[in-house]
Amino acid sequence: MNFSLRQKIFLGYIVMISFTLLVGSYAIFSLKQLNAITKDIVVSSMAAGEKLSRLSDSMHAQDLYEKRFLMLQQQDAESLFLQRSREFKDLLAEIEKTEPDIAQEVKALTALHGKYAALFAREIQLLRDHKERDAEELSGRELKAQFNSVLLSLKEMDTKIKAGQNLHISQSNSLSERALLIMIILSATSFVFGLAIATLITNHLNAAIERLKEATNSIRSGDFDSMPEIKGADELADLAISFREMSSRLKELEVINLDASPLTKLPGNLAIEKELLIRLNETQRFSFCLIDLDNFKAFNDRYSYARGSDLIKWMAEMLVGIKMEYGAADDFLGHIGGDDFILICSPDRVQPICNRIIEEFDRGIVGHYDPEDARKGFIISIDRNDKPAMFGIMTVSIAVVNTDRTLVRDPLEISQKVAELKQYAKSFARSIYIMDRRRIR
Image 1: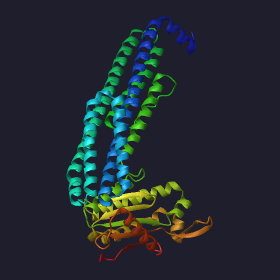
Image 2: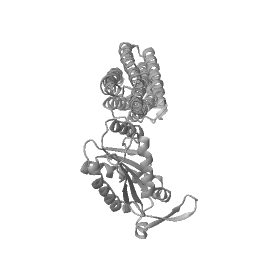
Image 3: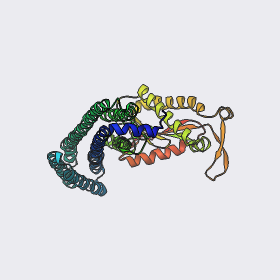
C-alpha cells in the first residue's frame, strides 16, 4: 500500500508520539540552553572584551599625549590626556557594574591607573618648574613602568574574561553531547516503528549539533570564519545565526585591537605618529620616507577599485620584502592610507632601499596594466576636470627627510617637509626619490 509522506509521518507518529514528544521537548530545552549560553557570550563577555579594547586604546592614547606634552608642552595634549583618563575611569566603572566576577581586578586596575595619573601630574609640575631633565627621567622610568603595569593588568583581565568564555563554550559542548546521546537512545527505541522519520530527524539534529560543536571549537581556537550554515527558521537556525553574529563581532574586535590598515595589515596613522614621537624623543637619527604612487587615481578610474586594491596589496608586499632584505629589525613600515606608505630607517640604508623600491616597482607595475595599454605606455582616463586625458604608466615618488641633515622637532615638521619634497618629486615624469640635503647649521 502506497502512503504519502504525510501519511507515513502520521502513521509513524501515532505509535512513537510519546518518544517524539520527549525527544522534541528535550531538544527544545537543550537548544534554548545553548541559545542562552551563546547570547551570554555575545552580550556579556563580548561587551566586556570590547570595553577592555577601548581601555587599551585609551591607555595608549594617554601614553601618546604624555609624550607629546613632554616634548612640546602643549596645553591641548594635557587636556586630551585628562579627557582620556576620565574616559578610562568611566569604562572601569561600567565594567565593575556589569562584571562582578572581575570586580577585584577592576579595583586593582583603578589603583594602578590612579598612580599613573598622579605621576603625569608630577611631570606637569616639573615642566612648569622648568625641570625638564627630571620630567624626562620621570617619563622614561616611573611613568613607563606604571604604563606597562596597567597594560599587564588589562591583559590579565582579558585572560580571565576569555577563560569565562571558554567555560561557557565547554558547557555548550557538554550540553550538546548530552543532548546528542539522549536523542540517539530515544530514537533507537522507536527505530522499529518510525525508521524513516527517526532517521530523518536524527540526521538533521546530529548534523546541526556537530556543526555547532565544530563552531564552538573554532571560536575557542581563534578561527572566526568556520561558522555553521543551518537553513530554516527553528532554534538551530537561530543558534547558527547567533554563532555567526558572535564570530563576526569577535573578528571585528580583533581587527579593532590592531592599529593597522584593513587592506595591507600594516600599521596606521596612530602607530606612525607614536613611532615618530619615540624616535624624536630619544633624539635618534633616522630617515623618514614618504612613498607615493603617481597616476594611481587614473589607474583606479580606468580599471576599477578592485584592481586598485590589488595593486596596493602588491605594493605593500613588495615594501615588506624590501624591508626584510635591505632593512634592519628596528626599521618601521606603515600605511597612511590610499597609495601613501611610509618607511623609517637608518640614514645609511635609505639610498639602497629607495633604489630597490624604484627598481622593483618599475619592473612590476607594467604587469598590472592590460597588455594593450602596457604596449602603448599610457591609458585614457578622466582628469580632475572630468575630461578624458592621457596618463602614463604609473611611477613612484619617494620623498626623504633625514634628521641627521634637517633639524626636526615634532612629527608635524616632518609632514610639512616631506610634503614639499613629494610635490617636487612628482614634477618628474619618472620614478624618483628626492632627499632633503640641507644640513643642520
